[in-house]
Length: 362
Image (tube, rainbow, N blue to C red; front, top):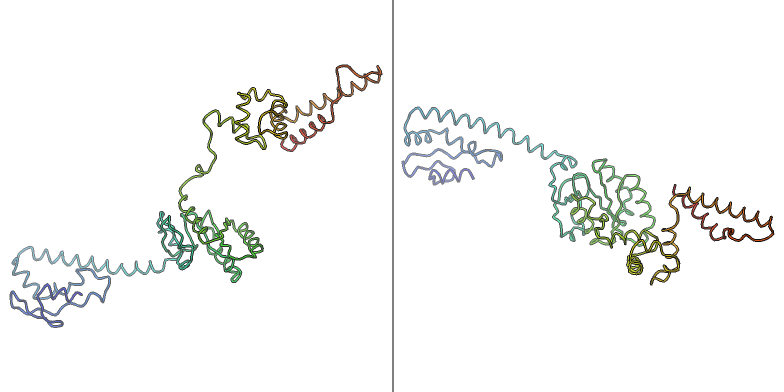
């Protein structure tokens, strides 16, 4: 304490009395009040009473003597005491401000590199499995804060069935403070269809993202992943553009339905070039290993069907005119035409399907 420090400095022997100075033999004044009475007291305030004693003045004068420096030191000491008094008066006000800070206002002071966990989540078994990111307990509105604009609420189906109004109150407390709001739901009941349907609708209405976790370990992985990727863009999960020719050809051919990477490599090894593949008839396409009837037809149509619905309609009209001219010539000459043939049923059906496809996508 301050009294003990004073006794050691002055050589006092007693606890509450003044004692004597072993070097000069003069009596010492009683020790100053204990600084523990004022937790915001500075060193000058704690030992200010010592400087006001006659013994302190006599000791200082004996060491350096009287002079012009004595008055200057007294003025500097008085200014220091005034400054310390002003600082001590402001200190309790600052502490009161810290105590009265709300949970929403405390979000501003949160550190960005830590997964912040609400003090309400103490004892949650999910926290035992968070090992890859640091986390700290904080006073805040949501259960977890990943970044200044991303947060999460934790809920279990069992707890929701016991307290159905809990999630409504928590969502209303968050207001619109965060851009990404996640509801991490622990599915811990068997009959969960009605609960999931209700919570899914609730998340849609309140602009929240519903994530289902079937164990505490899975819930912890979701929290770690959100925190680990908080400052990264979507390039890590986006599709990357291919740089070599073989991969680019594979992407083009895989755009045809049911054609995969293996089929693409087989086709390129069979025909050598993309031009040869596009010019190949259906009979040659069917000879390629692993290419069935459906894949052959889809590949052939992708290479030969027109891209516009106008061309499809034009080709259909030409076939109808050819069929009408052939029928008229047959009626006039009573013999089938030699070169012009009527369109087959298959071709007509293909044109109808092609026209409907372009009409739906135009």
